[in-house]
Image (cartoon, rainbow, N blue to C red; front, top):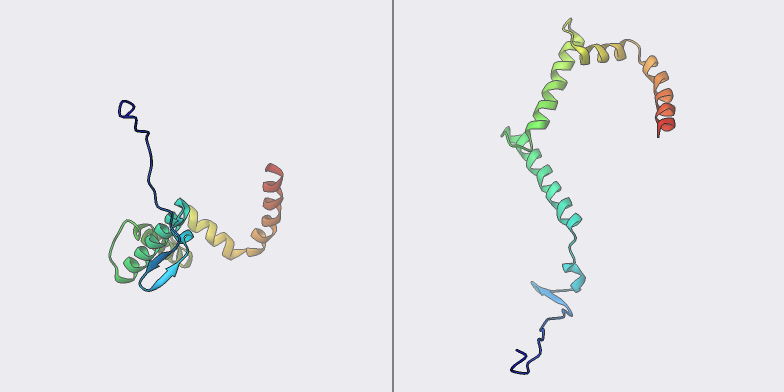
Length: 116
């Protein structure tokens, strides 16, 4: 280009307005950040999980919820029967004496604040 005495140049468009289906928008509507895309994507995954749970179809998004719900059911059965495992023992202790856990909560909060 130097031999032809031509300098590099650049063309571009500067948007004044965006027209879509009869509506006119400000160009700022096109400024989409990565966090906007991520939040929309997470919302879509949440919707997929909800629909999958409702219709009983296993997906990667619904399996953690199914496992957690199953654990809650097993824990409820263990609390009402003589079946025992560590999480059931903790739940049974809480049901037997809820005041012990209420008294431990301020101490734990104070200890957590001191550690931070």
